[in-house]
Length: 261
Image (cartoon, rainbow, N blue to C red; front, side, top):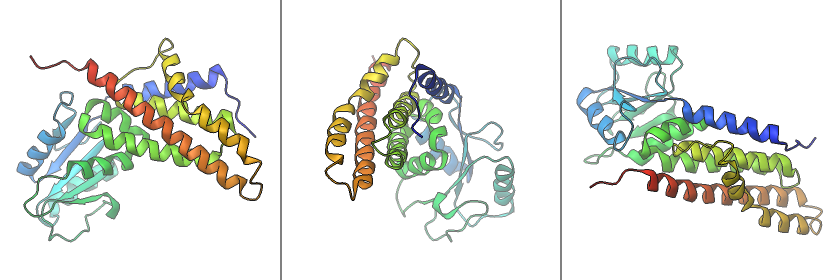
């Protein structure tokens, strides 16, 4: 059954996105102290105060990034176990590429290796954080600019895949999915969208209407694989909307940042 797109459903999506953006998330960084200090400085470039910090505790943290310069010892195990029990998502960074890629309480997909003689791979670490946290990463990206590109890329991919499952035929559900995507991208840039700014969001989403309308006109010509075309059109349209929103809010955030004298 198609979902009805009403002012109430749009307002609910707006409140959800505002809640995500308002969450004062932060990155806890632990492990090898000197390396953890370096990573905290690099992740914290341009970030809100305390948004990326070395800490022994994880209470209230959105994610723990744990740096290992050697095989995990008992102290490391205790720290990782405590985060696991507190249900804080875990990411491990192996500063020594010769280390075995198995870390207690950390999934293999959440382990990042540092190559010999290289700096921390911030883009890769940010991508893992983005995929690990999904929508929750928006609040972090708002406070940690290094995360914004990977978080927006992950959001666009995630919402585009959801759109492919919805298909281009269910326009209300598809449009609401795209509105949510645009709102999450706004939240990732620290831009609050209220009732007054909602028309801006709808204008960005409207950029995908032409593609969807054209696609709906040709769906009848491919009755055998119509469902496949619908999914492909919904995916491409949502990705186009997401990328337009990314450019729009990135420009807005950049213009709002104080410039150096």
